[in-house]
Image 1 (cartoon, one colour):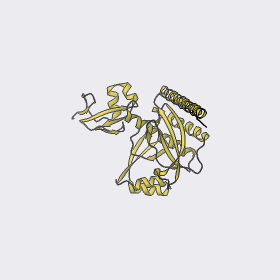
Image 2: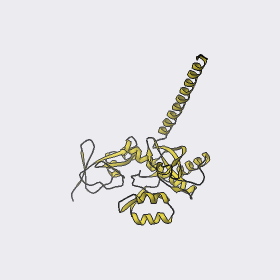
Image 3: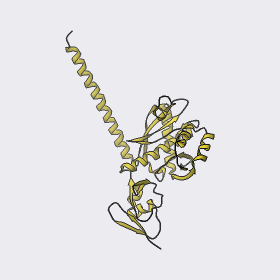
Length: 263
């Protein structure tokens, strides 16, 4: 049997007697890396840890410390939030949920805007899903058949997305009781998320076009360590203080100018 060769970022080559996936590679490098791994990059393409590695491929294991790893982590968190929303508000229509610079958002069509109390319920449901520690899995489906499926379920935004795709097949991702149209990749399990918080809501037109339906956007942030969340909250609080201080200084400056201005 020919050996499988994997090229690592430091230039070294690891050999295996049989085909392996990203998690197995990470574990062979170190237990710590296997625990922290969220995705991998094969030949420059970010993909799931569960994917098989072609022999001779350059591979990099991605963690939350890597920018691309954070994108995977936060995008997966948006799916967890979407599941929570659908379980609590089943009449909701899903739009899109991408990662952003720090965290993620997901857009929903709802009859009544989300309230602060709704966000608390959604966040609590997300924690329950995380504690299930269920895997993210995926499968390929025929695009035209998928369009018909979504039409029957009145998932108008998914239909519009699919109608703009030229590929014959598309990818679905699953976790727990939830499925979503998505290119991925995603983290191995929901339990990797150790801290999360929903931070804000806003209105957002579908595809940024004011002629389209106004959707409800929920923002959130999540981390693989609780200390990271504490650091984030501290930074946000300090930024808030700085903003408040700057506004106060600006107002005092203007007030002094008004007092000294000739009449």
